[in-house]
Image 1: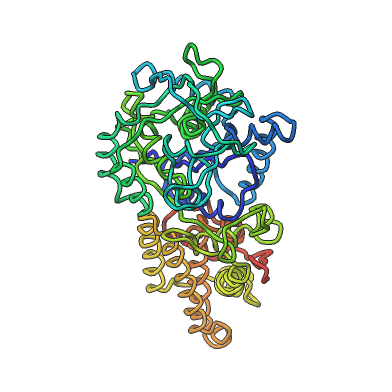
Image 2: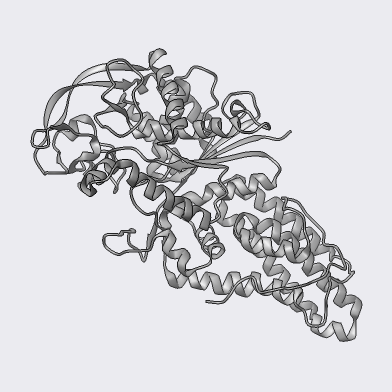
Length: 529
């Protein structure tokens, strides 16, 4: 029976260009979506641009344009970028779409009606000079955990989220004035009410999470979940569907994480082969993956699950957290202002997207922060992708003097190795060991090259045509199966192979090649850098 698999990719914030570190954190979602599609599962892969909140509002004010113009500019850029990296989203939307906003308001109201959102009058950060209440992102302070200067929403260095008490020591990020407190009417999410349910769920599924997700989530649970404000004083965002709060907007962490659900609703409204409940309600043989960087862990392991529980409508909670560590550039954090690194689009101007995908997955920040250098990337491209994979394809399918795949016999040991690769790589992928899975597939390339060299087809073509035919047929079969196995990593190259060998759409299973297939217009898959 097919499973219904929902894969959510974190919603990038539409306030600045994305760099290679962002791609390294997000590409796991595309990797999983492609894999499960090849397995024949029912897959929906969704995401979108996070377009609301203070940074966009402040930037729009400074540039004297509307927040929507800022958000749309980067949303357009993100769409171009994800297309360039061949992310296979079923839907990539944006949080200022009317469909999303209306659905989120319904979900918010349900939380309110169920008693999980309550009103509170409280002293709140206020800037007398700017004449406004300040959100946590508009406050700058010294992090009480690590001592680094940070904005009030979350420390970039240690990921600590400052408490309300800690924020009192901060200053207005815009004018630098010391903040004061002033009474404000606020709605809160009673997150503490979900402590027991989230603890139980986390204990049940945590072994399917990356270790950083386990540690970060358990840390918050041990501290005890704290209720969180859900309204803020802004003009740009999703309206609050509660009387008396018409002048406030929702916090973006509610707005964005519910986008996975609203995207699914929108997709299934326009399709006859699925219902959104199949992916989000219990009892539908379903599984939910969330793929993002480590700075987004608690929003997916705790916040999203709490919002789903608060609907009291038998929602299926997040099963697997795929949380990447950070990717650095030349041992430094990516920084546009300091000229460190390159944007994701800039990388595409210089390099092949298949090679970038391969390098970021094969050397990705799965278990610890990793480093990207141009030298290491170019070495990966030339030594692994060109010399191993490209060379096997080129010297097999462009062997001088053959115009079609010969009618040979597949080597039995090679057939076993191919089938083992599907099984072993698939097992590693489902254990979130993506780097090892790619190494396992590349080992099949190495096996193919070793077999080719040992068989010396350039000799057997003259002396033993039967052995020659068997060699080329066997290597062609390896290549055909690599077009399946590597489709989750290098979809352009594998598409070319399928065209060369006249193959059907890829599947995660052993395939044979048809002898007598004409080998026409074979070009190298990659160009050496």
